[in-house]
Length: 234
DNA sequence: CCCTGATTCGC
DNA sequence: GCGAATCAGG
View (cartoon, chains in turn yellow, green, blue):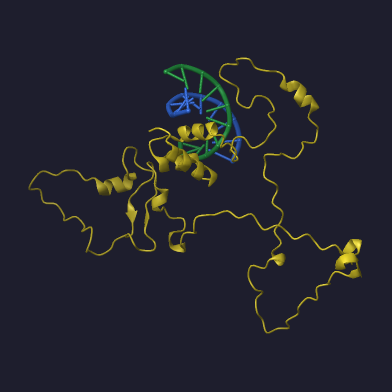
């Protein structure tokens, strides 16, 4: 597979949407996770916090090259100049301020027939009216800054409670047992999810169910359970 | 072990 | 330019 314009666009989109390199590789097909990462970097798509590169302090060589090559000790000067208190990391996202729900109540307050004690919010004391009509406020009357909207991120719909913690179709990998549990269409349909018997699509237990020894012809054997139509067994 | 992204380097 | 191999952290 080659990096056609279309595939590059797909890569960009998925990368920016936060999909992992593995997911992107699987989605595109024909490429490895490494290929995706390599391409993303070549495209300048870097960013995204890496689990292994969280800070900006290079310390020593974070990844000592296999070949020491021309290891530049020039970083010593920079290190000396670096202030003891590290400046705010530019690359890191701004710290998320505590979201104050009071400013944007997501749900109405519980209704009770008790005393509807509406806390008399102390309105900002208006000292005077300035030119142009704006209200002057005392130094202590500054209204608290409106908290920024909480960061939002599109997240897959929460799975139903029935399959919470179960192995869904999307969870399947080559090393996860794909033995179906329940029946497709049912709310709690899921997959076994155990580690597979290496080389097989099922775990050891379900391999035992999926693969049965070939018996000689004519051998009496108990009728196998009907896959459909029979009583549902889980 | 599994996963993640970053980096290197031969092709 | 490409991506396998490798590294390093979770």
